[in-house]
Length: 152
Image 1 (cartoon, rainbow, N blue to C red):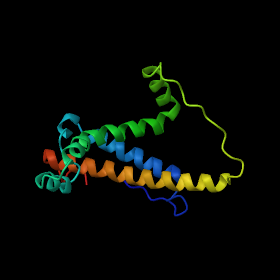
Image 2: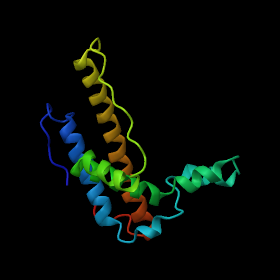
Image 3: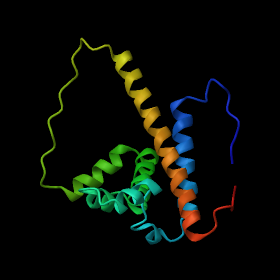
Image 4: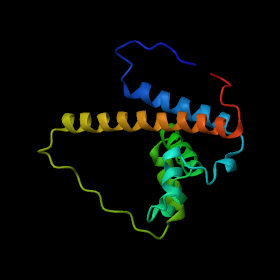
């Protein structure tokens, strides 16, 4: 479901967040049995590395299966939809004994507009990559269960 966007809004942060949330929602609706994603590598290149017995690759493979990315993408979506404060509250409940780090005010010499532009640009890039990952995971899941041509 691709909607046309005005050229001025195509690269906006809000549009990037909506694209990411839409891709994760699509992924969530498509993946009916998330446990099938366990131990499935993200791409074919990782399977090739596993066959060549690359030193230490078993650690990367164990951490980089499709299920871990599925969980990570859903967690990021929840942080965007519900806010970071909610996630921070849940973390505080888990780590009630861990002291919170002391926050200091930023230096007044820093140009705040440039700093904001830098972070917005980085956030937009990260959201684009995450959207691509969610779409790739959805397509790989469809391939794994044999419905690769459906819904396109």
